[in-house]
Image 1 (cartoon, rainbow, N blue to C red):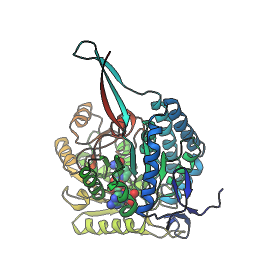
Image 2 (image 1 turned 180 degrees about the horizontal axis):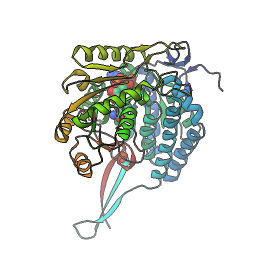
Image 3 (image 1 turned 90 degrees about the vertical axis):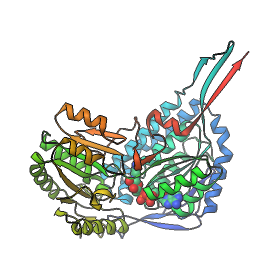
Image 4 (image 1 turned 90 degrees about the horizontal axis):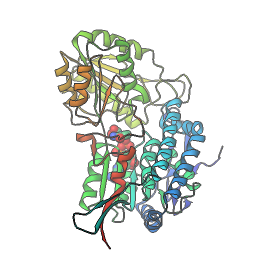
Length: 481
Ligand code: NAD
C-alpha cells in the first residue's frame, strides 16, 4: 500500500504538484483523511489543455490496434485491482463496499468494451448520384474533450466518458468532483502505465468555478461532456453554445416508480427499496416518487416500512452495512431541510429521516419515507439526492402515468405490474430516456445507451455505440478518378 498522502495533477505525461490542495474526508468517519488532492487554478487547467492540444493530432492518427492496446490495458488493471479501488471509492464517497467494488468492476468493463469498439471503426462507401464518383463517410475525433464529473460515481462516470473519448481518437482534459477526487487520481495513475502517449490524457483536480469553468470556456476545447446538477449543467451548456463547442449534459432526476394493483407485492417492495435507498439514494436514477394505485397502496406502504426498518445504516466499509453515509455535511443538511419541508407541506413522515449517531462520526441518516403526499409538493418536484422517497396515491393506471410524466425531469421511469398491456403501454408513453419494468429505476447495463429527456439531459446519448455521436464528427468525401 502506498504511503503517498498528497496527490496532484497529471499533465503532459507527468505527475505534478498542484498549486494548492484540499483534504478528501471519509464521510463514514470524519477523522479519516483519504488524502490531499489538487485544488488547482485556471492557469494549471490551461497547461493541461495546451498539453492535450499538442498531443491530439498524433493520437487522432493512431491505429485501431494502438487504441485497443491502451484501453485494454487500462481495463485489465482496473479489474485486477477492483477490491482495492472499490475500497478507496467507498472510503471517499460512502457507498457500501459491494457497491464500490461493483462500480469499479463496471469501470473496468467499460474500458474493455471500448477497447473492442476501437477495432470496429465504422464508415461507409456508397456510389454518388453522379457518374464515376464515390462517396465516403467517415467519423473523425473532435479534438480536445473536456470531461467534468460528479462525486456520486467517481470511477464509473469518468470511465464512461474517458474510454469512448480515447477510443475515437480524442485528447482528454478530465476534472473530477471535489468531493471524490481519489478515484480520478487512481485512474490517471493506471492510464500513465497503459502506453498512452503523454499529453493525450490529463487530470486536473479543483473547484468547478475555477478549473471546471476554465475548461468550459477555453477555445481549444472542442467539446465538453458534463454530468452533474441541472443548475451547473445549464451554465456549462450556455457557455459552450456561445462559442459553438459541442456539449453533452447528464443531469438530475425525479424518477417515478409506478406500482399497480396487479404487481407482485414482494417484488415491487424489493424494487422500490433498492431504487430509492441503495447507494444512500445518491443516484441520478434513484426512485424518489413511488406512485401507487389504491388497491395495493396500504399493503405496499406497510411492507416498504417493514423493509426499511431492517436496513442497516453504517460505515461504508463495514461488511454488514446496507446503506452508507450521506456524502457531505452540505448534502446532509439539504436532506434534513427537505424532511422539514415535506412535513410542513402536510406529508406524513411514515419512517426515518433523522440524523443517526453511530460508532464513527459520520454523515448518517435513517432512510425516510413520506406518505400522503401530493404530486405538486416540493419533495415531489425537486431533486433531493438523498435516502428519501415519497408515496403518491393514485386511483388507476392512467392517473399513475400522468403523475409519472408530470415532472421537468425525464431520466428513468419504472413500473411494477404483471400486466403485459400496462407494461407495454408504459414503455411507449413514459416520458423518459430509460424505462424499467419490474426492475429498479437505477441499475443499468454499460453496453447500451444511457441518458434522459426533458430537463435531465441535453445532447447525444452516452455509452454503447451511441457514444460515437458526441466524440466524433462526420466527414463526407467525394472522390473521382
Ligand atoms: P455539480 O453540478 O455540483 O458538480 C458536477 C461537476 O461540475 C463537479 O466536478 C463540479 O466541480 C463541476 N462544476 C461546478 N461548477 C462548475 C462550473 N461553473 N463550470 C464547470 N464545472 C463546474 O453536481 P454534483 O453535486 O457533483 O453531483 C450531483 C448531481 O449530479 C445530481 O444532480 C445528480 O442527479 C447528477 N448526476 C447525474 C447523472 C446522470 O447521468 N444523469 C449521474 C450522476 C449524477
